[in-house]
Length: 161
Image (cartoon, rainbow, N blue to C red; front, side, top):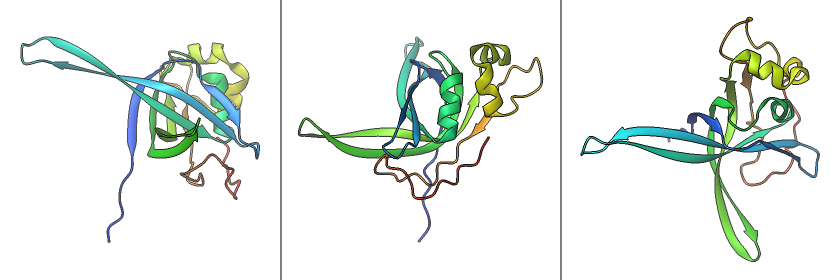
């Protein structure tokens, strides 16, 4: 039987500042909402826009470093996988769909990112040459994250930036 493909690619802006938390096993998790906007023409040749909101999750050391670089309005390109999880709140079963990021590219101008968080840049690695408009490519390999909860995976094989 053939394997499936679960891949999401998004280009958009953060709708609010990201929220950094830690699991009970002290694993960092960064969550934020990303807005993507599509423009289209109606049959009456009127231009319309529709904005979609996506829940983004990033794990590990990258989450900690990016929490210092990202802020409301940051423009990013994200690759990841779509995951749906269920939970219970106030005796009501709920579900949420999230994008678990495996790659993130900062698209803000480098000088804006550098002025926002100089110490975090060293943790994130090289961000390109001076004057370059595109920011750092941040790989976020989250293959060891269990899809059904936020528990700490048994392996801590995080690769630094």
